[in-house]
Image 1 (cartoon, rainbow, N blue to C red):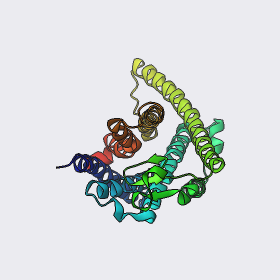
Image 2 (cartoon, rainbow, N blue to C red):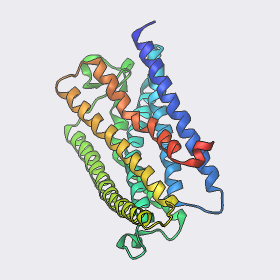
Image 3 (cartoon, one colour):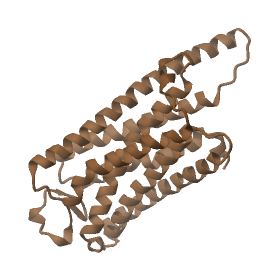
Image 4 (tube, rainbow, N blue to C red):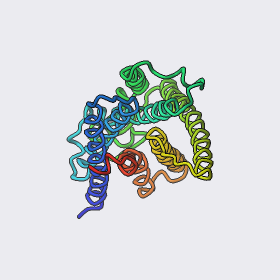
Length: 294
């Protein structure tokens, strides 16, 4: 058994588990959403699970084909679609996580808070920013459509950044830097939103915790609201996202600067790229009583 086949099998197994988990989240929240009480955050969870599924499939299919020695089967179109969808869904993951944090922060904010002015008038209005995220990421990532090639269609000496089966071949440095600048700018903006909303949520949860302690000391019973429980779940997702995002960035810098030919580091980086998509559904399952019962 070749090393490539072994690595491909492991990656397929782990990613398959993530696909099953996200599918479970997607179907269950869609079922909950059919009820009379429609919650905006459930739509965001559905979108996050759907995005994660596409991201994992865009990684699993090429990796599996490469593991079985069928990388040439992808051809240029297959490579373009897999890399393009991977980049689009990566951006969508950042945008959706930021929106999720923002929606939850607005939900648990006091009635007299300025944040309440941001509350959507209808649950369906949450679809507008989600649609905007798709358009934004499709446009920003469009540069990749013209610069991804399959390994069988070119010589190795012509390539710049390699994967197992697809290559990124920029022919215009100005366009390349514009593309990279837009990606970094978008990530920075949405992570800024995520940071501010998360900080505000932590402040509200701290005040809530102090209130609970006061009521307990005063012999009053206090039951934590579902909104507060959901806020803790969202914060766990945020911590998970930030861990995988920044760890993957660190590995990317190391690989590009010092360890370009280190296959083990490259494999770890590949896992870090999809780690959030794999683990996030199981965080939700462990925190949501209804999902855990299922």
